[in-house]
Amino acid sequence: MRRAIASNARESTIGDIIDQWSHRFETEGIPEPVESIEHIVAHVIGTKKTLDVLNMKNDRLSANQIKKLELLCECRLSRMPVQYIIGEWDFRDITVKLAPPIFIPRPETEILVDFVLKRLNLSQAESSEILEIGCGSGAISLALAHACKKIKCTTIDANQHACDLTIANRNTLNLTDQIVVLHATLKSDATIEVTSTFNGAGNVDLNSKQFDFVVSNPPYVPTKKIFELEPEIKIYEDLKALDGGDDGLKIIKPLLRYAAKVLKPGGRLFLEVDPTHPKYIKFFTNKYSDLKLHHEHTYKDFCNNDRFVEVLKIN
Image 1 (cartoon, rainbow, N blue to C red):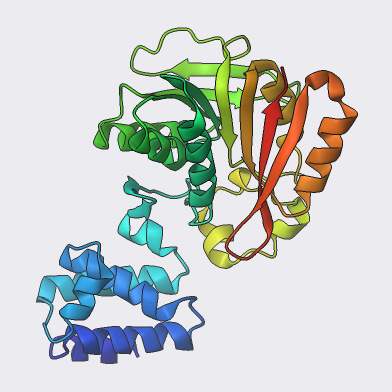
Image 2: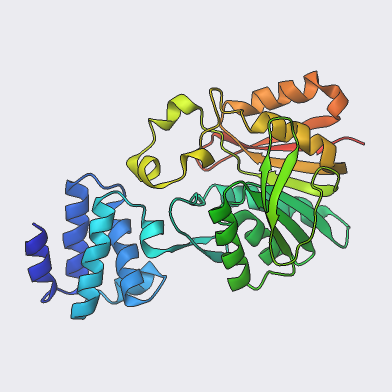
């Protein structure tokens, strides 16, 4: 089958190639077969817009482009995510570079960014200090800083490679003045241990510094559900960025306690969570009233699941 596609590719138009490979992907059970090949073709011809691909359906690829396309399609057949295959992805109004196994930002996380920006727009403050816990590729902090110049972000991750990728994306987007990246870990005792800083960030005590907002898309998938995830995730992505322990709350519990210490009065914590978690978070804030946290609101994702939680630090 592969030889047939390869031999036909030289005489085929881009439209033919899309039809051939989408059929192959569909036959072999690849999710989103048409979208997969359209993104790969767009990457091969040097555009990010699949609309450009559709407008070029009658064009033909060069021999080198065909060879590259076939190699990338083989990667997709091995269930490598398209985002890793092309090495970048759009998130809100920015493009971030991606590399396995760093967590791929999902479209629903853009909703989290929108809620934070809405709160920022209601604020009269001339500047806002934001802490992101678990930056991955840096998508959340980068999108926030790109959209609002009064933001100063401190963003941390326990994975050194994630920090490196965030720094690369930050530098590409010219957001160095707004974003500080730290290799640091949120520990079970609700403290943050900084391993290393970058670009002369200096010594930062994240256990005493105060923030207007804390934002996180933490690992929240219950361990038993990890094995139910599709191969694209289980094989290629960092499962540590997904695995939230037995109840999915392994990181969220200390994160709530940590946020209670570092949020300014009136400050807010925004979390992306499993749909089973908002009820627990509301119970937690009621039970531990000494933390002065109030469950403000639960927001839904595109599929109408409870996905985002906003928590207020009471005066």
